[in-house]
Amino acid sequence: MKFFRAKAFPSVSRKGWCVLFQHPFQTDKNGQKYPIVKRYLCDEQEEVDVLVEELNELLRIEEYWTSTVKGRAKARYDQRVVNAFYDEVDEPDTPTVNKSPDAYQISLIGEAQSGKTSIVRAVFGIHPAREKFPIRFRKANYDAVYEMTHSAAYEARVSFQPRQEVYENLEKSLIESALVYANGGTDYDLAFALVHGNPELHFEALFGEVPYGPRYFTEQASTAKSTKRVFQYVESIKSIASAILEESKEVTEDFEQLFLQKAECRQLIETLLTCIERSFKEKCDFTWSYGIDDWPQFAFISTESRAHYFTALHRLTTEAEKADGASCYPLITSIHATIPSVKEQLIVIQDSRRGTSLYDQVKEADHIIYTHDASREIKIDTLKHLIAYGYGNKLQLLFTHAERLQGERYAEERAKKHRLSAAIQRCIQREEQVVATQLSYYLTAADVDLVSNLNRSDEDDHKLSEMVYVNQARTAQTQVGAELNPIYLSILAPPIITQAINHLHSSLPDDSDKTFHEELTSQLATALYYGFVTQPSGWSTSYHSATDRQRTFQAVATSLFSAVQAYVSDEVTSKDMKEWIAVQRTKGEEWGYYVKRFLQTKMNKEFERGLYYVVKHAVESHGGIFIH
Image (cartoon, rainbow, N blue to C red; front, side):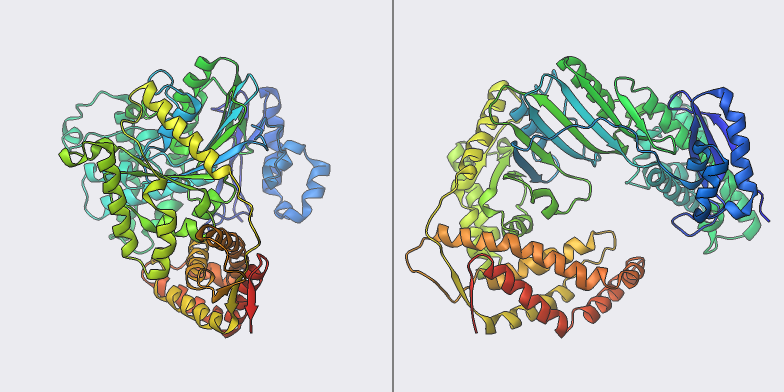
């Protein structure tokens, strides 16, 4: 029988005590038994010994190693011990940032460094030099909501990755670097793999950088504390990898498993996590909320001082400390910031970057701003999907960095706008005729705004802000006309549905890291919108305009996507969830094969018949007429 024992130690993040122990009946994500868990226990040192003894008693008595006897444990042991052992979390009273229901919501869509952050600063009146917020980097991958408020307080709520997610990313980084060394790599190869091998972790920002050259590892010339710390981690990984190689004489298929099972590996990961916790503790301007594992869940700030507000947020989100390995920004998952305003119409700007699907980013938006660097090629697929979701009427194209269009041909703004219009038309002409017709309506030169010299002066910011407000007023206007009913022949729907599904099978992404369910729904709904919804056989009246037709199509599109999303979820993924999860766990080249085979099994003739009625209901709910 395995022996378990808990060890107490002071909390790094706050005043109090934690325990570390191997859990007797839990498993980690890989199915390994007895994972090491960390739990916050109590505030006072006087209580630690008694509580640890009770926890050790729970770890000794096997009949308590199931959640079904938690009630008996509560009657015998301290509530804090029971919570630590059975992972029962008491939700703390956490302050939240309240979102105004009357605010006008803008969603920002676009590539990195296309000017989204500049729009936020311009609309909220944030000076880019004096008030360095928001801070966004290519590697920063968090969702942000910036909200105007009529209150006097500046508030922000910053959420962080859970401890288990960070733990798994650290495991991945250590394994990658250990494999490099085990396969004949040098010390520098190991260090480079550790620091740069896992882009999801940003090791160099959390712990420190290494010089871009192998010289340091022979002369040890660097004096930076963070670099010396990284060198210590390198030595620990070498030691663990060497011990495994001595036992097995070569790199075997179970090297990864053997590496993770080593007590030295788990100890190294806990050391790295403690290092991160210390960097959190240094950000003392915030009120912190912690989980049962003593890991920060979120940080909250509320102040009436504008200077204090922006300074505190800059310290938390900045990359300035990257060289010494004390940054927190790689672990941020979301920021909700509110800024007082005297404007009558409040605005909320949403900038989503953390794996959120395109539909989820825009589904509650009153206005969508698509930013694009004028010097780059236009990516038409995103715009095509937005129109298919029913958001064409809310779309504003904002081309930024117009100053990068060099040469005498683009000296005047009119010439630059003409160049962009020609680029848009080239992209549209590559699409099928039915798609090109829709794109041409929404992506005309009249709906394209051009911006130069972002954040160069207050005047430029004022122009950018006015541009957003003018387009906000334009999209907020609703035109009420006579009811217009599109007429469809029901016999044309089944072959289009079959064609859409066949195209889906041939164009599935080959990357298992994609949010596949959203990708599946998006492709299917987009094909049905352009192939069927926008191609009626007639109309209920001949007295209508192109604008009336597009308004009708967009209304149908909004309902169609939601209905297709629910139908695909119910019939494909949710109905056979265990089988779907098994397919999703497939790695490498086999992933695409198993996914296609799974979908071909589920998307059969019965699925097509059901999808026909989904399309029919979405069309008829907005006045469409099906003729049999």
